[in-house]
Amino acid sequence: MNYEIALVFLFGGLGLIVLGVYFFLKMREEEQMQKLQNLPFKEEFRTYLLKTPHYQNLSLEDREKIERSIIRFAYTKEFIGAGIDVTHEMKVIISFYACLLLLHIKTKSCYENLKTVIIYPTSVMTKKESYIGGIYSKEQLLIDGQSSNDTVILIWDDVKREAYHPRHDNVIVHEFAHEIDFMDGEVDGVPPLEKSKYNEWVNVIYKDFHELSKIVSKNRDWGRYKLIGSYAGTNEAEFFAVISERFFESPKSLKEKFPELYSELLSFYKIDTVALMKKR
Image (cartoon, rainbow, N blue to C red; front, side, top):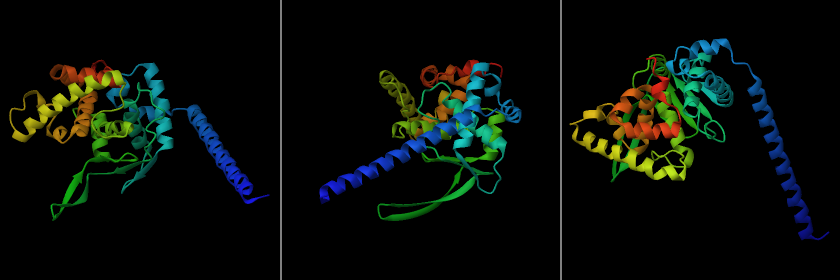
């Protein structure tokens, strides 16, 4: 057997081994998903969800659908407590709001790139260092939540308050809106959209973002933009995350003050949140 033929057999054998390992892992993954699909949704978990108005007002069909999603999410993502023990309540509430955003959106899997959810009991300080124009600076920032594609950081005090007593903010919705934004490979305030809807989305969303940015720079004449707030003027990605919060938390006000924004978000999330929150 000459050298070239030996190499062909060697690499062919390695290729078969790699292919075999791939199919083995895929089979194990499918078996795991099937097991999760058959797991019962505990009544204890429902007691937490029933404290949230969003779950209370879902149709029976949507409740069953999101309960399956919660189980898949909770069992396939790693939850880490930083100075706090992770409880079933934490997993269920975080999983619920993360899955609510994707309830009617077709995706390959539930936040495929996300691996870890880190939970802090209260807001955490972090250091930020920068070197711009030859000038080095260091500052401390208070983090209420953070998203970085494969990891989401949440503060349980905020999560619990905003989930059970909704007003305008919801840190879970905010951070997972960032995760959705990144699904097309860019964090730019444009989530994965059908091509036919792209131009309309950009025209509507960016128009209000630029208008808000002007108001933030002047810090006056807020008018209806007071509902959205100054943080949304940071960049297009934060604007999308904040208006997603308003869409789920105070949809009636958003629809009244920004009907075009509400319409775009309704078209994307495919949830009539005004109707969903009608009992409040």
